[in-house]
Amino acid sequence: MALPPKTEDGFYKWLKTFLRDRGLQFSKSGFKGGDNFGNHALDLATGYWENVTYSSSKPIRWIFTVDVTHQPAVAALPEDMTDAGIGSSNTAQADKAGLAVRILPMFRTGAGEFIRGDEFEAQVIYMFHGALPKGSSSDAFSFNPATGAMRRLNTPVDYIFAGLLGLRAASDAIELTVDGDERFITYAEVLDALQAAINIAPQGADAGPIPVYDLTDSGDLERIKTDLAKAWDDAGPPPAQAAAATGVTDHEDEDEEAEALDFSALEIPENPDLLGIDPAVYRQINAMLQSGKQHLMLYGPPGTGKTSLARWIGESLPGGNWTLITGSSDWSSQDIIGGYQPIGGGDVDFVPGILLRTFRQPLIIDELNRCDIDKVIGPLFTVLSGQQTTLPYRTDLNDKDSQQYVILPNPKPGAEDHEFAPGPGWRLIATINSIDKASLYQMSYALSRRFGWVYVDAPRDLRGFVRDYLLHVGVVQEAPAADAPCPLATLWASINSVRVIGPAPIIDAIKAIRILDPDATFFAAANAAMRSAVLDALDMVLLPMLDGIAHQDAMTIADETIAAFSLQDDQAAQVRARLETVAI
Image 1 (tube, rainbow, N blue to C red):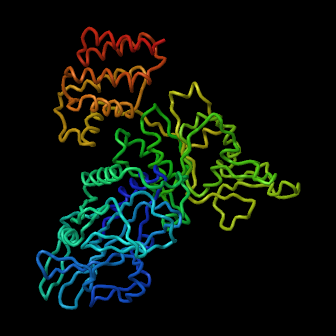
Image 2: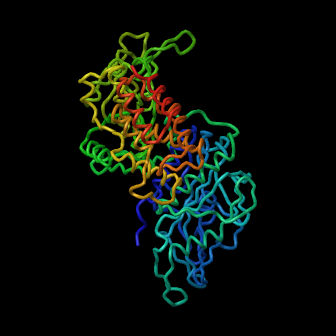
């Protein structure tokens, strides 16, 4: 029975983004080789490594024996050990705030008889309080599952969160021959045995059983995200933050950076956390990538999730690394491509811009039309068409005969010093707010045709989005009745009839309303507390999105808001007055 393909990917993509936004990363120990154990062999008589000295200090798996001669099964460290090596981490960049390790169960089926349980693998994620101090490219970690104590290079290290990750359905079962008899054991039994054997003590707390998260269950996937984020927030500011992430990695996980990428079968999956995106958006993105379109432009109304979607695409591409920058009217091609700059000592030399410095991976340019697009990335026109271009900069400024720098359109192993060659995963992913197209910089047709364009619209079913969001974040536990009123969705529809906005401002409004009225009910006629909260949310979140609308449209929105929330007298007058302030 084969292991379901990469059940854990959704969680690890989320965690990668969670830490990236804090200038941090995490290590995945034992993942590089996939299921290949290399020179590490297992002894089926002891249930442990064959060469203990070689394999136990920085193991590619955390080994647990699972004694299935007992019912229920009992898990333990092999050979009566009290602690064991669980994996290693590259801490040389002082940016690692997490460690994921792989557990391999060794089933004890009789005296001196063990069977590998690769298909029943589980994983454990540990989170630290910020980045671990700088170490080596392969620091060893060990763990005592009785006390919950962790050590790094034999030095105690605190952690703020740990979770046992289930990778397949709890009901999945395998048949084993136990003391001569056939017995089925389920994945749930294995997880139960591991949970009973592993205690954790985050930040020195009393030791207790490690929590289990079934990553095949969407509810558990959301629960681990919530629990991990809460543990991070509860721990307070980290002692020392690493420098902000640029998207450049230390290549600890180079196994994920494929040498040659086949995009014909690539599939960007739907992001379960990004609600309100039409499935057609993912279809179009995948069709473009699979047909060979290298660069993508996401455009549409504000607040529709274009930036989050661009990041998700970057995470989902092979390698999972990307760089994000936000467009600025101050940019020139020197910022993106590069140019001559002082380098100290009175010298001037060519300094690559952000694109050439991170030419191995996707570059996400958020709000591209806030810069003078043709001027900033004009030197890339030819490269985007699949041809090389020569820059007006020499390798030696003092030698007029020195070679000029060249940007190549395709990867080139062993590129020369004057050549900039992209990595196999490089591409541009840009976003544009369609509402800004008339007031900000325009993109020429010559550049436009070098991108695949994907329109990211507001949700079609506004009421359905409000319902799905409230269910997603746990505000409500079951869907409201089909005929239950949703005044907020009515307000949103009224706004969109004048100027389309995406879910982001509505989510902000919901959050504000819940702070102002903790008992707010979004699928019912508005009561007094809800009316007051909505008026405040309108001022704080929604009115700024409507600046410059026509007076007639403003009054239409006012009338429909008053009707939706049954506003009376002073509150009705307040809404009309507020909307008049943004109207022209």
